[in-house]
Length: 356
Image 1 (spheres, rainbow, N blue to C red):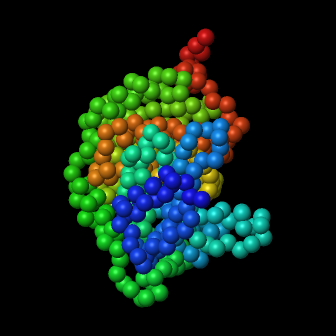
Image 2: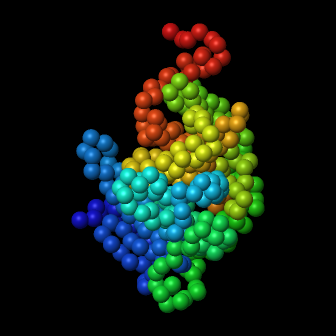
Image 3: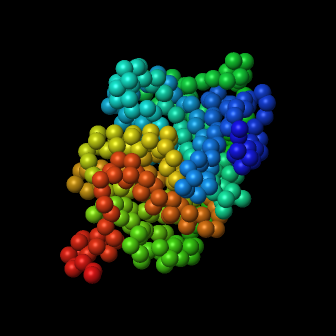
């Protein structure tokens, strides 16, 4: 039996996207949709843990490419590079080690994925907001499916659905929203430029055991404990997305330093686990290797919110979601770490005596 709130959330998703027959196939707890030639799966699940607050997890997954040799370091490197510019979703593939352990062959599939956690206090606005972000999945799937990247990966576009079966070359008009809405507004200056919210976030959260940081008209920088080190959260209105233009870049870097190959594998696992786990933090970006000094790399991601989706207090949510993502990643791959308070981390960094 589908939860009543889940059904409402799915109906509101359908309304934003204007899904229509015969290109939608409902199933219990979600629906399949083919706005173009790539299958999009939307699912809603209610938290069943009575010890935690009521919440619903909404996931959107788009089939993009199949037949890729995911054991090939070159293919993994190309995917990691593409992850850097994924604006509002995550590139996901099953780690090859899983197929080896289960003695099965890998399907070589690459999917786009994003998820959002909706609570009673956010249900009034969150479904529509997430639907507008997630629409970039089928838009980019259609674009990547026709790009040279598919050939470079040695795979093929993962095409399916009634339009393919009917050899129908048309697409749903919703796939034009990036070019007709996001891109024109992205030619303007960032709507987050000069806002007071960055300073307000720093004032409220940036002087605590959980966070240290500063904010002003130019953006926000926060550090949050990650063992004896700190993860870096940044909100920047001055970084333009190569396709969508101006908006707000919300990024996170983890202090887990390794080689490029090692960090690429770490990011692969983080992307995969975030697609199958209840993370309690929205999954709106791909983990990818970020180069840092001394020739090392660390796991990082960046969510680009287009100008068209500007909303008051959204920057605050993004900052808190990044902190939650750092906590989830730590528990997923580095559960042995014990977080020090920020004042002790800063004292050790600058050689000052620890506070009593």
